[in-house]
Image (cartoon, rainbow, N blue to C red; front, top):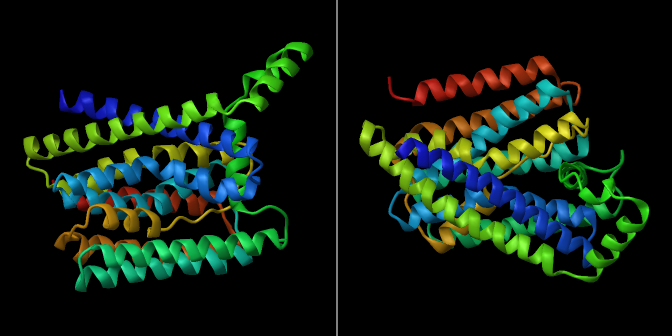
Length: 328
């Protein structure tokens, strides 16, 4: 039953995350928000909402292994698994400007998170610093890209565009007259997208609660530590919305590299529910996260692209990581 409910919780997280991003994006579009800003904020945070909700709920439930394991494990999965799968589908273009800006932020935040693990808990002071850092980063990126990034749209815009196309708007299949009528009604009302966003958030919260309960139950039943469950099963589950968006972007050959970071999830979790970083994560998994972040920059720097062979190598690296941390 734990496994059945665990699978159900992952379905809720994916479905709820999709509804949340769809509703929030459509609402923002109708309010005149630019695709760039939507990509930077709503789509980026929306696909990370399952991860955020799960970590917060796990921390509130007194399960730091799941809470922090999810943060670190998702970051490792985003680099090795998600980028690897996307690169295998189609090589990922890496813009030099974005690599130097975003890549260094990823590496710096991973290094800071590692250092904090040895010295401090994830308390509200740390959370406030992380959130302030994320706000400064988003402001800088927005100002830089609206000033005209060389080489066309960057990953933030393309991520939103890929997600918009993923929705497969039903209006496109309507005859001309009904289509115009539907669009006129939709543009005049914010009710439907707002309800979609609210409904998606409720589903994500329910899915996150169920995921934490089931993951804890599985860990206790089979003698597996909550930290390992958080680093693997929970991390992969909460990363599924990001994986779906990245795969669709790759299929549509919108293969620009969008590097994630731990500022938002770690910061909000620390603010709402301060927790400790388990010793296993401090001694091993944080260092793996830092190592793969540095390795990604090296790979991306060679030719400013991540090819299929490199994508396979990233995926193999993730398989090796899971094999090492999973008890035998």
